[in-house]
Image (tube, rainbow, N blue to C red; front, side, top):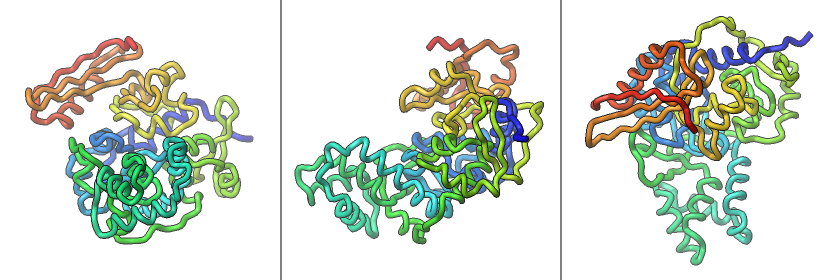
Length: 365
């Protein structure tokens, strides 16, 4: 008989696999690979995502991985910016290429209806060979070849058609500016590799399972994965959730004690734990989801007892050397002490040389 897993069990399983029941001593690169890829749409997000999961994590632990090319930043899962190990990028990127092309078509299909995309990709590779160009620079160079075309659309299209990474200092702590492109195979020093979806499914389940086919599709951006899961079925364990949806897991992965305490944690914006499921009720209520996931935005979240309990913002005025962390709670706390303690640790990590202030207020929408 198939075991039914309630939401608390699914919650504790997700937290354990995401290194959120207790901070891990594993090295940063190992943690990045454990998580498959970490969101990097905003420069500081991957740093905070690793800080909240790893004991003694320092900013240089991640920055050094980008400079020595052990990790790379690029459009990967769901066509959004992520950081992944270079070893994983070379096989994950080809698997998600179709979802990147869908995103390009949705955004620019109408204005590029008569474009020869193969020629565009070939010219982009030629222009990038042996050098790094920012997206605006590449777009303008392509517009010289095809006068009258929008350079911005050309630059964004090239990003999806060609496997590129964004070399540092882009993407490092507090570093903004135009996004640089380098050919992934040149930067990493090895070719891209063809791989079946099986490998990515197994890695996803190890990091986020038990989960459904729809959950995997939501996280990866890939479609029509039912057949791939069916092929894997003999080697997977299956469960059902409380609504009867089928969940898959790796047989070697155990489920934690549902009574396991879950400490207060601050998750950055767009954290994949929040985005990794079609059904996110293991992490929050449907009403909370409406407040956290607004259009294309996913707010930074506060976890209390393993579930979303509020959202937060950090404003760092470097000129005034002052940082204020505002926590907006969806419901009152019996004891604010653990939140205040963890907030102080976050402020110390994110704004080392600043005066710190903390505000805890009710969520008002």
